[in-house]
Image 1 (tube, rainbow, N blue to C red):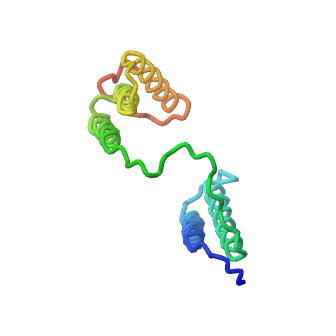
Image 2: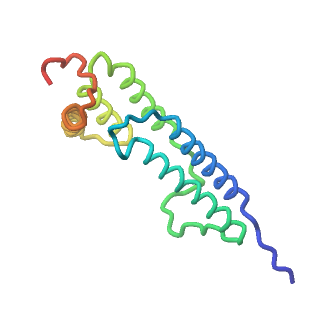
Length: 163
C-alpha cells in the first residue's frame, strides 16, 4: 500500500502571488518621498504590510511542502450547484454605474443614499422609504466624517453651500 500525498498546487500559486504582492509593496514603499519632519514617515506601514505578506507567503509554501492542505468547510449554507443570480449582479452593477456617473453632479450625500437604497433594492429589500432614510443618514454622515474628521473633501455636488 502506497501512501501518496496530494500536493495542492493552487496553494503554491497563492503563496507566489502573495509573495509578489508583498515584495512589490516593499519596493513601492522605497519610492515614497518622505519629509524630514515626520519621524515615522509614510513608508513604515507599507514596509510592515509587505514584510508580513512575504513572511506569510513563505510560511504557506513551507506548509504546502509539508503536505498541509486546507479542510473543506463543514456546514456551508450555500449550494454550489445553484447558478449565479445574474439579474441581481446586473442590478448591483447598474446602481454602481449610476453612482459613478452622477457623483460629480449630485454629490456624495445624494448618490451615496441612492447607492445604499439601490443596493438594498437589488438584494431584495422592499422597505424603500426606510432604505432611503438610512442611506441618507449614512451618506451625509460619511460625508461629514471625511470632510471634518479626516479633512478629505468629498464632492458636495448640488448641495454645495448647504452641507
